[in-house]
Image 1 (cartoon, rainbow, N blue to C red):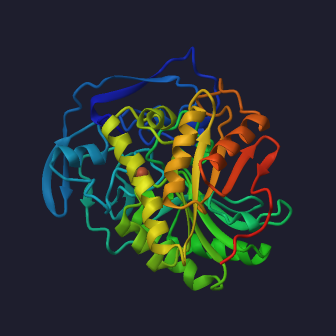
Image 2 (tube, rainbow, N blue to C red):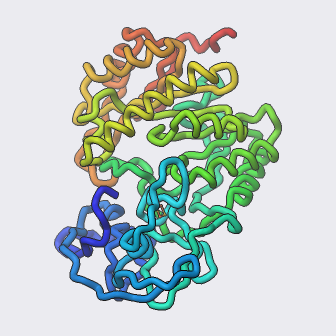
Image 3 (cartoon, rainbow, N blue to C red):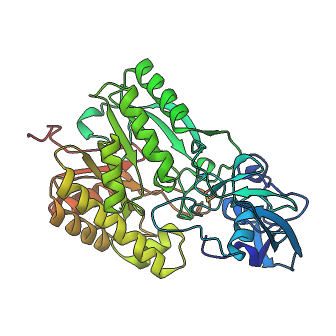
Length: 410
Ligand code: FES
């Protein structure tokens, strides 16, 4: 995501490969005969057995873009070929966008030889017909689930969770704009092989699951759901139509893309429960936690998430239940920084629900030691001392929430 794909090819270090199957089943190559440098497998490999080598020139191919014949570089992805021809993918706030670059979010989809297909992982081929006008196609996205969930996410209202009944029907969508080395859901995040659903299909499945299990909410988590805006807004429109008005409609996001206009659009579409996860307070920590090496980008993402919290709280707290996610592991975040994040949050609103995830060993950080429940209780105390009234910590023995178990009054 931070490197331009066309400049590299991926090689495999056989001494690091554990045969885990992620590259065969989860992040599946679209061009096994010749690497086109999409880097999807590079980002998905849990054992970092893939490395980048400079790419040789791949000649040129002839394609048609929106009816115009063009000569573009060969041996690369459609995205790279079009970028070389001057096409811009990342106009702020709209698709097509190279948001995940690993084939999960479908926000880069174009019409390729008559079908909606992902530009970021599809190899460009001689004679391809490409249309950048996707208006006639429903957006798609890879989604796992739905499944009923006992705990929910960082914004699931804490008083609804009794750890015995299902509280939400949830889907988890593929594709993320972060590269967290300790990604807690990497088999979904890096999936580019499962079928992609339209918003209508995903909403229908969610609504059925909600009815079958009688959950109080429906939720979309990930990966990062906000990447494919057209898909996500349509999903909430469909959900608002399909579930009863009292059923919560929950977005579980990292917040990096939740600009005010995006929040407005989601609320207007029927989303009434939003989780935002700045994770921490400082940009250096954010880079460590998210795997981003571009400081400007990390800083922009972190600030967008923090501003989203403020915007939602200031403008929508009467109709959107807001929850905030922070993370803790002593190898990644200090208690001083937890306090700093708590103070920043309390200055926005002391009644905002905050959930702290105890980062456990996963994905590329199997060396992490899971914080003990005692450590997480210390984190809880630090946040309460910062002025926050609704603090929940995830621990190896379950979630520990507000002590008095009383729902806040109106
Ligand atoms: S950017 Fe291509 S699928 Fe996400």
